[in-house]
Length: 196
Image (tube, rainbow, N blue to C red; front, side, top):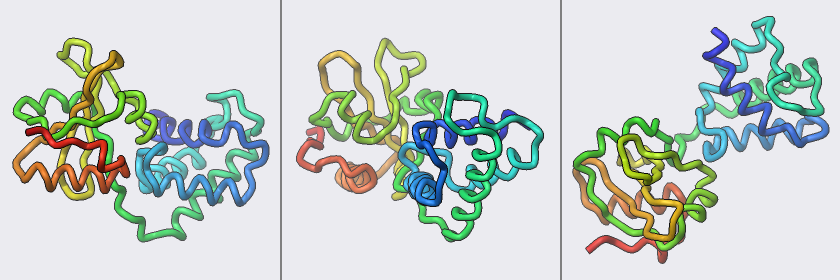
């Protein structure tokens, strides 16, 4: 049971580890971050479920990181955060959902649709998502996303100087996929150059 909730609860603990007090402003900010889905990526339902399971357990919840928060304060924060997230229903659909990097193996027929005029580090920082080494690849890194438009894309590149490529998995008009990617991520449209 611990494995089911520990990851999301540890993400929440990490997100508040530099806050000296877990007041209502921190609860509100964390709820917005959960709904935004960029740095706390599991989705609001997963966090609500994880908080419920964690609070009903006897496990220590505030021990994974060195924080100024004792067990009682963190448990209280989680309870208030869960209540706030429940108040915010219905939750908006996230702009994109990160897919497991292992799905790269299903991208065999994916086609490049654009080059991004930024380094891999710049794209990673803008999206607040860590790129992972692609399985079965020769040193490239990727971020696999399902956009709220329904399109599945991969952003692929290297930490060495070179292009960062947007690939489209599945059928569809590349211009539509590019527009959906730009809308979901907020990347500057002028830096997304369609592949000829």
